[in-house]
Image 1 (cartoon, rainbow, N blue to C red):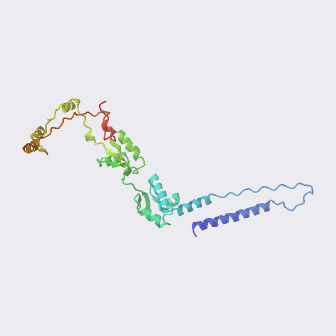
Image 2: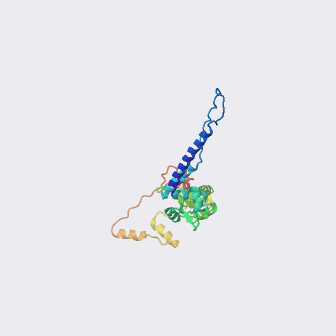
Image 3: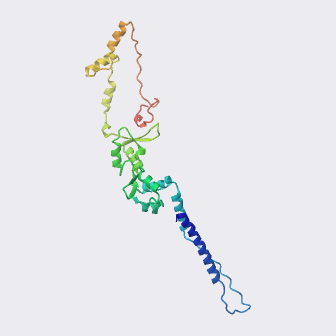
Length: 279
């Protein structure tokens, strides 16, 4: 006998009980046969009290709707329970909490057992994230393993407060949180502590005052002096051009521009790189 038949039978039993109670109440309200004065007023009949039933009917209806729902809806109920509690549940405990009968529905059992977000050890079900992290320290260690960036969506379900910990690491200068302009996804990058080098202002000024050679031939000579083989041979190219009667066209010297706040930036999605621009 399935749940629907049990519910129908239960309703019929309630109706019969209600009818029986009503009959008993009506019979007890009748006066007993005893001598009364002719002119004595008759006692008023007591009103029948409404019969109250338990909430079992509503509960059974809810159980029936859950178990008759699609497999995907039942899986969603179970995964939400596992995700919110982060505890391991047996099939019986899941049934008591969500009314999803795992043992009574093979499709539900097989889907849960093979779900990438569910771990099944043969007896209990628990939530399984891609990365097994327990806190902020482990999160930082993981991020540092991905210098090219790690998608936040891959770690956001590792534990309940992972997003808050990412913001805390960003505030502490341990990571960068940037948005991918194409996919609109947040990417977390490690802020390598080795790269935190403070350069003296005098050294910066000396670097800016170094004048580079204007001619490519001179640049190639400087490279060779420092043991670096240039990728071009400007002297040979110019000699060949003169033999063929082709005069090399001198390139106009471009004025080097400084980056200011009015400069159009192509890396506008990296605001942290342009915090100290010239006004």
